[in-house]
Image (tube, rainbow, N blue to C red):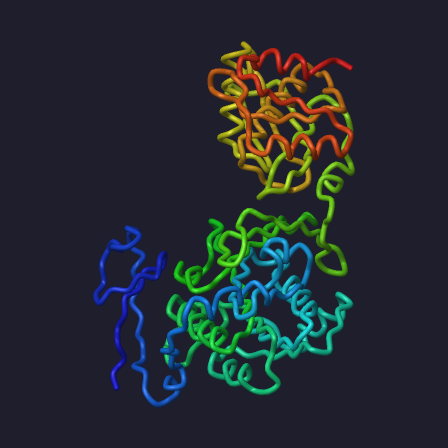
Length: 436
């Protein structure tokens, strides 16, 4: 029987019957690729019959909330109380960030049986990593399998598992589709089949996936729509800090963040992130403490700035952990409203600890650190600075003001944030950047 040709968009996974230069769904150019799909035959698909029984709302109401499975504290926080029985979770992150390590720790935290399928490593390699991390579990079974048919058979085999882990989506393939593992069709069809099986059996399914250079999930975007929860594990491989964010969650919030530290024994939960960020803080010109909010959790972080006389005609602007566009905006306001000649300075700003911040509440801390560095005067070491800077030089209030103040008070700091918009930027900076 002849294969069927399908044209699939590499960006959104939209299918068309013929090739087009521009995808009609996401309007991306030159992203439609041709794939050959074998026509399904035999009875292997006959077992995948969906239930046609209708049940009343009263019969189903309230059953989900009673089946939360507790694992790691920070993971449970992001999920909204733990894993939901029968849910499908997608864990994404850059290569080397620690996805496999976190998956192995999660697997050992389940009280019931867990079946771990690794397509990237052999079962012996996974077991060796578990020994290196000093992880022991009698309910964890390992297998190095990539064929989704074999995986399905092993999932259905006794004993029934409480959770299934697939590491990773790019290695699993369905033999019914003659394309390479990791291709758009294979990632989508294999994931779809595993999701159906998990839903039918009421098993928690966790799938790992790589992210591309621009920070999006590898494979079709439809992979995100197939799962119940999407988690991103973020961090710099050269630093120990790791953040776990939930960007989609059908059973809980999406505004929580879990904090981990990578150590020799794996990923350790960080109960007090502010203490971690301020461990090596020293009081010097260009250094200021600010309070940022990730999800709904406030963190105290150190913002450092260094302003040096430029040696060339064009002043440099560099930032680590802070958007360069935001830095340039703050510098433009300082130059316009305070009359500082910043064109004469190369300005470098860094957020200590490996965090990346996009929220505007960091504006005032950036401004204070830059002015402190230019004046070579240290900022009072008992101050926490946060606030959004408007183009007119006013300081705007930010969300979670009370939480930020409470976090600062917990560590013995005084807060400097402008709730009165009539207070000028010049007065704020002069009040904060004092010569010690």
